[in-house]
Amino acid sequence: MVPTYTRKNFVNNSGLYVTLKDVLWNILFHYVIYMNSSLTAIILSGGFATRLYPLTLHTSKSLLPLGGRFVIDFQVDVLVQVPSIGDIYVVTNKKFYSALQCWRDASPHKERITLVSNGVMELEDRKGTMGDLYYVLQQAGFNNNIVVLGNDNLFEDPLGYVVNFAKRQNEMVVAVNEFAKTNCISQSHEIVLDKKTFQIQEFRDRVRQVTSPYYAACLYMIPKHKLSVIVDYLESQGYHPEPAQHFISWALENKHPFYGYLMPGLRFDTGDHNSYKKICEWFDRKLR
Image (tube, rainbow, N blue to C red; front, side, top):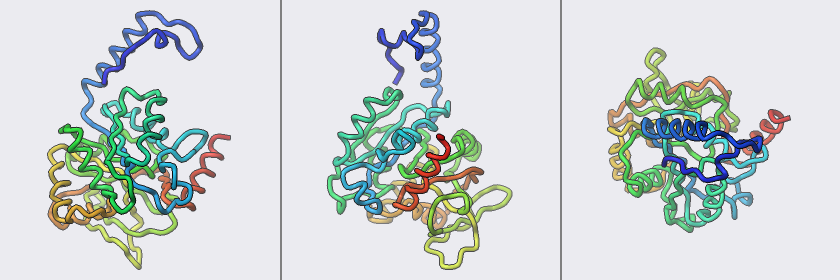
């Protein structure tokens, strides 16, 4: 949405009134960004984060405290820094919808954020990562290139580089990190990349002997001409909730090209107690 402006918008951070010219330029800037945006961002926050119990019994993983803010605040920060990203959709479950609505209403980026409930109240009814993605695509009814971000993934790097890489490929892309640059405890899968093109050659899940250092994040770029692949995948799986990385292996098996963008910096996961503790410690050191 194009931002609306009221009297309070005429006051800057110093409490001084800005000129009408400044306000008009601000409106024009946001309008140009909005009209030229080619990407819609989707934050997947529809799960119940059972590995973080009891922290997440009554709190969404997105709303866990981090560096004096919430985890989701840092995700929105990096998304709005990418000029080609317009609207941001946050998929949540019915249990945490009200809490995330309060967060959205207080966000400085609330004009760009749309909250969508998947209608799920109980753990056994969860839709899974790809199920939630399909749900928001159906509910929102948009047909656009999308950026998909899991609510437990944070990155040291800006996202503009992976977005530009995906534009050049015009195929599905997943962010990849060297496992040593993550705060994860164990490497549950591995990716083999072509060293020249960065096309994914193999995806191996539940590996016993790791031979590749590359590890997929829950950060996907999917062009609009590939959105139908999500439907094909879910139909083939009987709409059962599956880990997001299974989508990569299925896509490769079905001859859908998938590329990996190698993120040079650190990746942080908040999926379990150990990883959440590590990222909190890292932010505490950074903010001192």
